[in-house]
Length: 106
Ligand SMILES: [Zn+2]
Image (tube, rainbow, N blue to C red; front, side, top):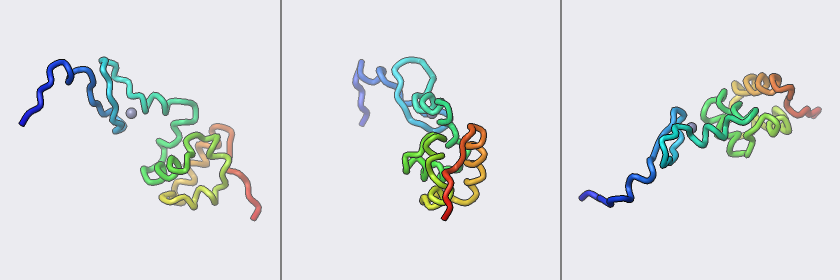
């Protein structure tokens, strides 16, 4: 059984960008809206992480370095999916933006 709806199936095109985002575009513009959004300053730091760590941060709403800097290293490590191996990368990314993890003394 095939569905044929003339005039209705060519208005939107399902696309998958190089980063695996699924999006719909009616024009020939190849720009992925998700990637475009991630191109904001500091917003691409998640790309340096593995998928589990990335999801951990995204799940906690930590999508920018500025937000990340409001957490301590310890708090970040407690996120499900976050491994100790990700911390040096995050520190590095923070440092490059003149930021650091929140300091805790206990
Ligand atoms: Zn994309």
